[in-house]
Length: 138
Image (cartoon, rainbow, N blue to C red; front, side, top):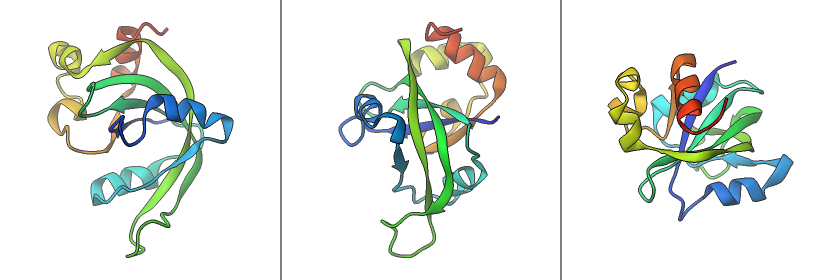
C-alpha cells in the first residue's frame, strides 16, 4: 500500500463534503500539474491518503482511500489529465496543522514541508504513522 496527501480548499471541497459522499466516494479531479498527475497515475485501489485542508485551516483532517484507479478527467478539455476516486475512511481525532508538521523534526523531509504547493503528493510510511499519531489515531 502507498500513502498520499490530497490538498483541497475547504471552500471548494471540504472534509465534510467528502464524508457526505459516503461509500460511493467522489472523483479527485481538476489536477493540472504533471508531477501530481504522475502521483495520481501511481495510485492503486486501497491506497490511503491524508485529506488536507489548504489555505483555510492548513491541516490534515481525515483519511481517504482510493476506490477507483486513474482514469480520464472529463473536466480537462486537453485530454492530458486524469483523476482517481476516493472515499472518506475516518477523521483525525484532532487536526494536524501545517505548523505542527513543520515543527516536528522527523517530518522535515515531508513533501508538504518542502513543496507545499503540490496538490497531490506522496507520504512515506514513517510520515504516515507519525501524522496519524499526531492526529490521535493508532
